[in-house]
Length: 233
Image 1 (tube, rainbow, N blue to C red):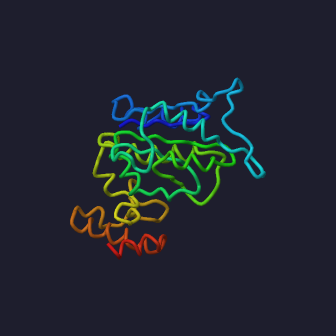
Image 2: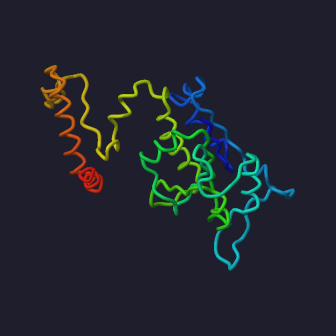
Image 3: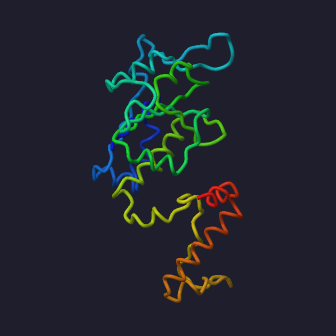
């Protein structure tokens, strides 16, 4: 899988993807990650990528011609979902909520192109150049870089081979609309709190049943919205 990120601040991504699992996965060529500076596609001597909004108002708006120039680097046709193996994503609070289901969908693509804004907003015409608009939550950040990092991490770890044990992914929070069951390790007792004995009895069928029950209870208690989805499945 190839992931290209269009951003004004490529260096922001160096830390999260040069450590741990993501670093090893790239070294194994399980996915390719590239960061492209949008300013490289500016057309004036000042490398201008934004301008004041028509009609007045605060802040600066990313220019449509610059975004289009940057996308032209890939020599790809644009438009809604133009290729089921490639997706152009715009990171924006106006987008659809990013979910585990969406991460799994993205992980099956061959090519993901992500656009990160860093101003008051985008020229509305930029939206016609992308396939999807994605949000990571109902809050505003200084730019699309941090949301893009979350999207990349959640997506890349679902690529086969990135995470060591595939089984651990299948049992994680948000799979099947359930939160993950409680986990314990040594010591068996700590400050009066013991590990549930069922986990030490060695009966794997009973353990599996207990874990499912605990996942359901946790989801019902903490995320009623997910619990309702679980009941519908």
